[in-house]
Length: 274
Image 1 (cartoon, one colour):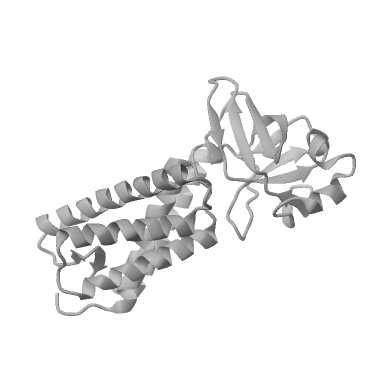
Image 2: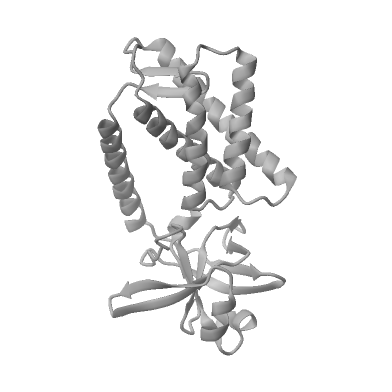
């Protein structure tokens, strides 16, 4: 390979790093905001510039891989404890090494010359426009698959949803409803709509006023077949969905919407498989 275009180099590694850190989030169940994910991927893509140097010693390449993993995980996830941070770094490192091994195998066993991997950097000899178009097509296929999967998803399972804010925990029966597609446009987090009657312990008898004091409070536009408006949403310290049928418990990164008085907290079942 004679020519490396810096824009393609950074773009390819940004894409790869974003999905690696997203995969780490899914495996460890740690919340990942879009902003933190982008910043982490950008930081990781800068390490790809080392591909411009002559091949480094394996021990030095490994050290760089470890440093980049620490930096990216530190940026991506809020620090909770050293143990949690270390496990996240190990998870990201393992995913990265698996991906690197796969790319090295492709590089070794193909003669196309389109893939070049060196010094912890990946380069694909395609134009930036082709990369964007491929990403767009992949995104469309993923959305179509998700739509079909959710369209034919039926569940008679029973759920309970626990939310914790500080020392207070409230719970409400959950209703899996594919019609609830409400998502925060900035963070990308899905919204679970709780009944205001279930939030009395947190918000008192005046939820419209007390919710404004909650972390991450803001108004989110919504629309239904009968109209639309603005929904008050906030972030809880912890959200857990428990499957009453199987006993499984799953920690979910989501926002809480304050709905009218209702018997169920409504959530999209898609969040259980994300």
